Amino acid sequence: MKATNMGKNYYELLGVSVDSNAQKIKQAYRNLQKKYHPDVAGQEGHEYTLKLNEAYKVLMRENLRKEYDASIGEMRGNYSSSSLGRTSSWNGPLRPQGLFVDENACIGCRECVHHASSTFIFDEALGCARVKLQYGDDEQKIEVSVDSCPVNCIHWVEKEELPVLEFLIQPQPKEGFGIFGGGWERPANVFMAAKSFNKQTHNENHGRNSRASTVEEEETPAQAKARADASRKINMEAASGLFSRFWQWQNKPFWGEKEE
Image 1 (cartoon, one colour):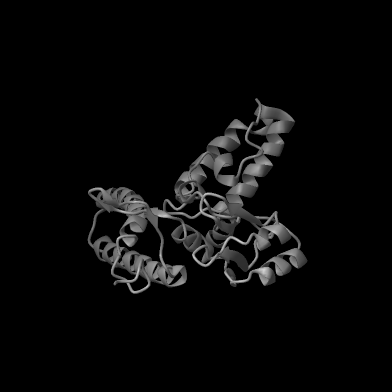
Image 2 (image 1 turned 135 degrees about the vertical axis):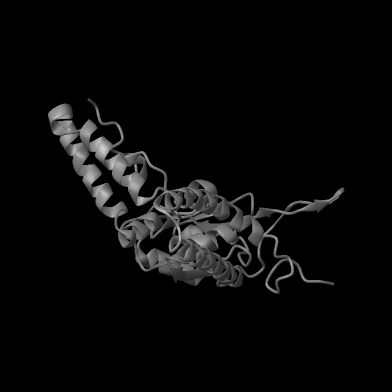
């Protein structure tokens, strides 16, 4: 029996999605351990099960899982790199901070790309630079690239802030009216937008958790299972719609064009 997934990330290795809960991860791990047991798959199976053990150890511990998600550019709650599209990945061990380019301020000088071409990339379509690989170059090249920016649009930010910032800076479709409008837009101040988005996310999660705690005290085991299944479905739908609702906040001070 041949193990064919050795080059994949932990989620792909186990055959689960980024949003899978602990129960699904455990079940997938057990099934694959049986399938690739050395008595069945031989030496190659032994090497594969070692990789499975490593993946299971990380994904079953929340703190290790969060660090791993960030290292491969993933966010749980339907915010994976496949949906974000332009998130940066990490080179080497995960570090407390990462680089973020405020594309609104970027003037397209390409200095950062010139000095650290493995870390930065120039988006020809948008006419601005962005980070493609965190710490893709040595520290000296990165420092020179940051210092060479004439408008100071390259920022060091906490690694936990990166996924939301990198999503919000992406151009989003702009609603048109009749033959007018359309095109794309993004927040005028991405840092304030990120703070507001994180606050909204926290409030919605807190509200759902509070309601769930109240219900759990009164429900039967069968009701608890039904509620848990429904909750998972609701969380997935809420996550996918959260970003969409956020883009509709046209009246926020930090958002869009100035009123005439």
